[in-house]
Amino acid sequence: MSRMIINRIAWLQALTVVALLAPLMGAGLFVWIHHQRIEGHLADLEPRYARLAGLLERQADLKAMTLKASQQLASLVYPASQDITQAGNDAQQRIRGIFSESKLDIISIQVLPSPKEELKFDRIPINLRVEGDLAGIQNALIKLSSQHPVVLVDSLSLQTIGAVKPASTQRLGGQFNLFVLRVQP
Image (cartoon, rainbow, N blue to C red; front, side, top):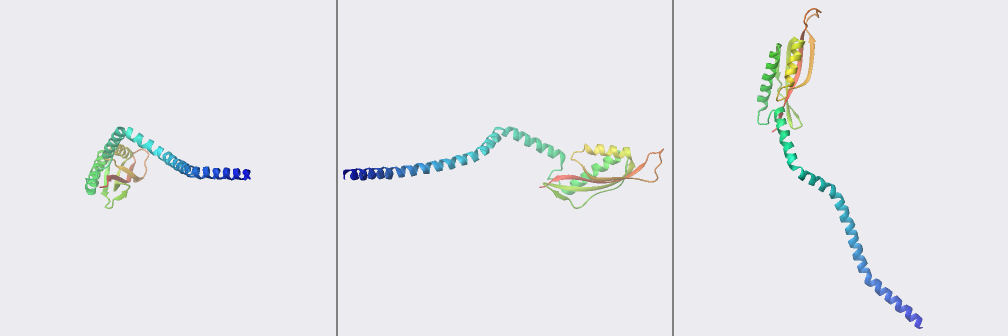
């Protein structure tokens, strides 16, 4: 009988200990689960934080590069403050001057009325027809490549004019589809 009482007391003591430890174990499990979740969030945030820290460390370099890129952009395209018509007319006059200096006959040159939107730029198309010799066309294209704002060649076609004579300089007719860019406001 005393053995049964001792077993019963041992069971009651064990249940009492388990009952007292259960909340502590539950709290520990709760803390461990939250700790694991927070470590996962920190692992996700660590690369972002490293990138941000790198950007903040290089902030002066980034500002200098941004300023340099803005200056380069300003030299390559027409500014948004300039009207599309003014930009087209300016480009037309510069192109006319280049091809005239290269001793080419300008048959026609016109700024097309409908600029196309390209990313953050207005694309202003210009059609040009000229006649002259190959050296003049090459000279004009070389001069055209050094222009600021940049004049880009979309397409061109050259054809001989008249009969081909081996002893003389061949005259060519050229159709150029050019364009310039203007920053959109």
